[in-house]
Amino acid sequence: MTLLNVVDVEATCWAGEPPPGQRSEIIEIGLCVLDLVSLERLEKCSLLVRPEHSEVSAFCTQLTGLTPEKVAAGIPFREACEILRREFSSESRPWASWGDYDRKQFERQYGGEVRYPFGSRHVNAKQVYASGYGLRRRGMARALQRKACMLEGIHHCGADDAWNIAALIARMVRDGVWSREDRGQAASSIL
Image 1: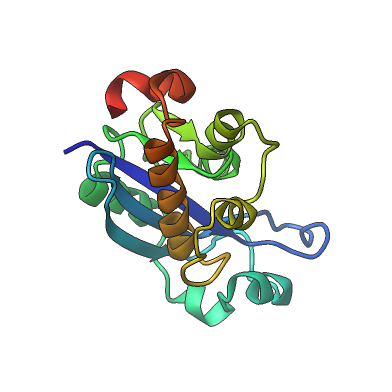
Image 2: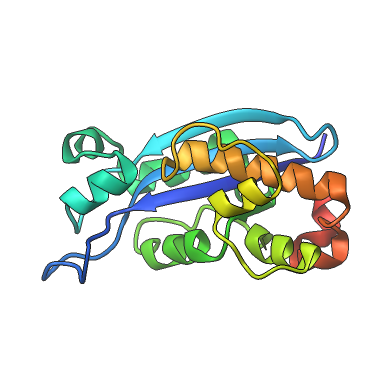
C-alpha cells in the first residue's frame, strides 16, 4: 500500500494587516490519508491548534468557522507536530497540499523546540493540476467544480479541504496527470 498524506491548514487571519504583535499561526491541521493504488481516502483527521502569538478574529471565524473558544481548547503546535510524526508517519511519508501556502506556513512556524514534522517529499497538487490539465492555477473549490467533483463538507475547514484535495489527486491519478515527472522530488517514493 502506497500512502500519501494530504494536508490543508487553516491559520489566524484578518481582513487587513495583522494587529500589532500578532502573526498568522496554524489553528487547524486537516489531514487525509490517500492510498495511491486503490485511490481510496482512508482517514480524515482534524487537529485544532491553540495559537500562541495571535487571536482568532471575527473575519477568521467567518471564513473558517473556528471560534476563539474552539481553538483555545486546541493543542499546542508542538504536540500537533508530534501527532503527525507518530500517527501519520509524516517524516517518511510523502505529502501534498493545494499550493505552497501550507508548506510555507509550517516552515514559518516551526523552530525552537518544535521540529519540522515533514520530510522533504512535498507535492504541490495545484501545480500538478494546472500543468497536467493545461490550465491556470485554480482554487480547490473551482478545480473540484471543473472536474465535476462535489465539494464534500465545508470549504475552509482543514479536514474537509484535505478530504476534497485527496479526491482531486485521486482524479489526477485516474486521468494519468499525476505522473512521476510531474511530482518532481516525490516521484520515486510515491508510486
